[in-house]
Length: 139
Picture 1 (tube, rainbow, N blue to C red):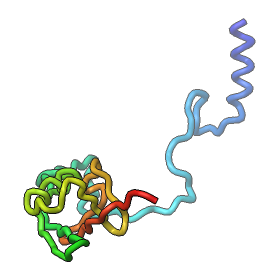
Picture 2: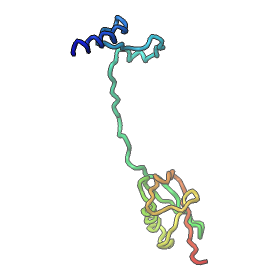
Picture 3: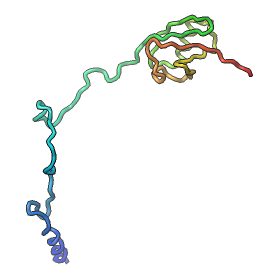
Picture 4: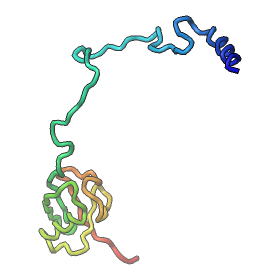
């Protein structure tokens, strides 16, 4: 049985080029490839490691935003962090101006904002203006 299998394999390997023995395969680049230039200082380098020199992500930045009271035209500057939520912004505004009341609704870039949204989610930039508005109930 082994002789029959060996004869069948021998016929298969007869068609292979002589450079490849019966148990080898051709390796390397094809002959029609174009060489790619490389960075000369890395000519003899086989492994490179990149290291971070500073902190990967700095802590949340503090920046000013403005709250514009649409009822009386008053502007209230507030210092916030990019990780603060709208709820925290409202609490800061109510500390500075308690006359705005408990139902402080805010708009940013023409859209009402939700209490759970963070300033970074809303892509708020330094100096951005939030506008207060009142909801009209009834029909």
